[in-house]
Each structure stands twice: as C-alpha cells, then as structure tokens.
Length: 70
Image (cartoon, rainbow, N blue to C red; front, top):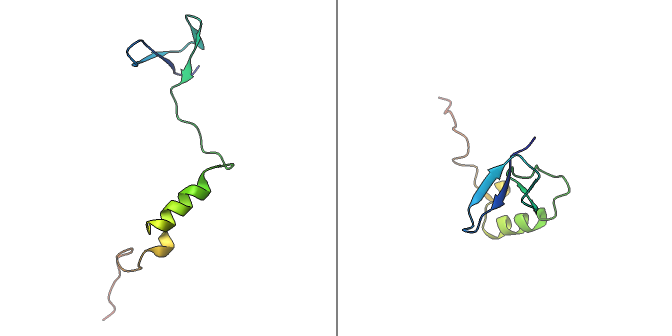
C-alpha cells in the first residue's frame, strides 16, 4: 500500500491509497529510486565540468581542516 495522488480541477494534489479513483489512474507520491541505468548522468557531469563543480576541479585548501605540526 503506497501513497498515491491525483490532480484536482485547481491543479492541487489529492492524496489517496487507491490505485484508481473515479476512473482515473493515480500517480505515486514517492520519488523514484536511484537507478544504475541513469540516462542523464553524462549531462550532469558535463554541466558540473562546465561550472567547475567537480571534486577534481576544487582546490585542496579549505576542503579538510589541517593541523599544523610545530
């Protein structure tokens, strides 16, 4: 039994536990799980490279607190 929803006339979600309400198929209210067959990972990596957000593009200073050896 999963939480499902349908959209009303005003575009607001109406939550239910039923698979079909009033002849309309409901949608899952839960986000999809991670899939190893990710079709869009290449695009995310390209955007991260473009904007310098990859871990390999960040400087090592400031990532971890360092202790000075005196």
